[in-house]
Image (cartoon, rainbow, N blue to C red):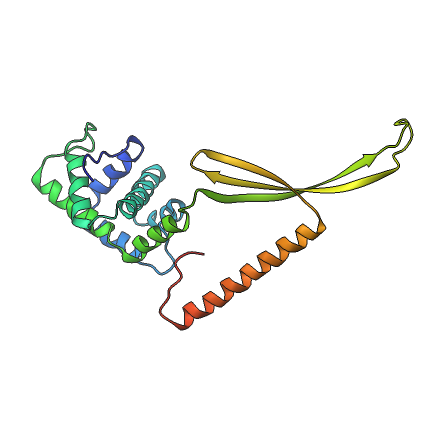
Length: 224
């Protein structure tokens, strides 16, 4: 991972990491290793605030966002922790940010140990890899809506009430892609709705079966 550079938006979070004491790191690790703890920044902020009570909420949020980004970057780069930390240390040493930059050997050793401790919580690393793999698709579903319309039909004089109506349904699908947010509109009738319900219910049944197999065997579900 040559030429690693810390993005501007995460620099202040790394500044907080740089200033953590061994006691801070130990307490944060206890939180990170908690069974229900996630790497999601808002959840991390709530969990870490009592430990870093002398710091502002903004500083704690910067720390949480930086830590999340580092876990994500490591999951994406798939390099050994030693190499990843070496690249981080180089990025700190060469940074233009005076709050972040340091060439002091003792500071760098302390920061190296801090990075290595905070970034080797196995459960969180697995969760980030699962999240990345679970969303590795060209298009990701975002939302759905069915728009029902009544379309009147006239035969002749439109000043008179319509002869009848047609009921139509439009399935609106919203999704995210590399190109941004997208929408797809599809006409569906009653039979199509029944087909969709059948397919979705079958999918739920398959997931239930796989979940039961995972519980009974070696598989561990990291994401659904």
